[in-house]
Image (cartoon, rainbow, N blue to C red; front, side, top):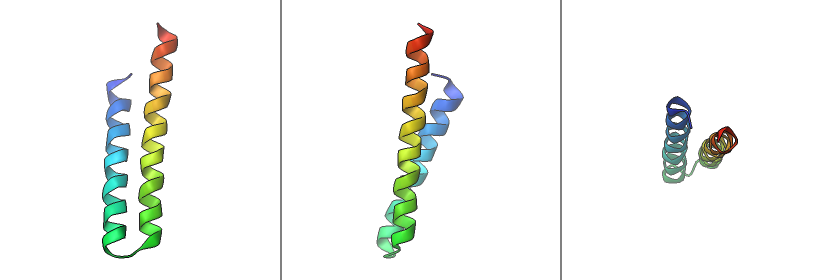
Length: 57
């Protein structure tokens, strides 16, 4: 996995977790949903990079 892509995936997940937490604290359903979506996007990016690594070997 590329170091840059791995960092992007982790940052995206962290940003999503933060956004979800803030959304829950403020009872903002939209922000909570956006946070969850960003976390899923980060997970997807991470999985994609793992698959790339598997094919490179």
